Image (cartoon, rainbow, N blue to C red; front, side, top):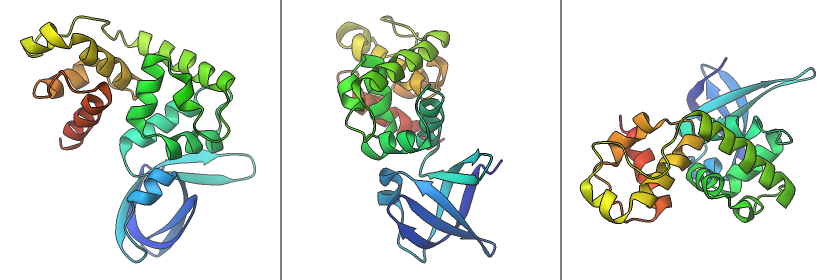
Length: 202
């Protein structure tokens, strides 16, 4: 399994890039969000990868962050969501937006992606919400250590953020310590984004 590539970009086009590592060029399918975040041709970068093995081909998908990679894995575990649709969703939405859409049951947000109709969007929400339940995400009451202001004024925002982050594979114990210094009255999506940034700095 190839977990990541660290090398020089030698080719780039909509939907894919080629990263040269130790003289070998690896072609990676990428989302538009990843493509926009990459440096120019000739510069070095790191991509987190997911290897796809089929009867007729072995392909790599590349992602700018582990969160995008993990979100792709979860999306493609849903019945009816293949590589093309998974990449299309993450080209239109950032991982935290996908997580929030699933957590809130917002199928309209998911249908912004090419190839995702309302029926498939609802299936994505249903199957990914089942994964959240298995993680035991709290519904209303924050864990000890969350600022008192959160309980008083915005426990719902924090609770939604914790639930949304579960879509990306994080348990409450993983994320709650990083939420202590975040204003609980911020919009849910911003809480999610700031939490992911804090986790990424570890």
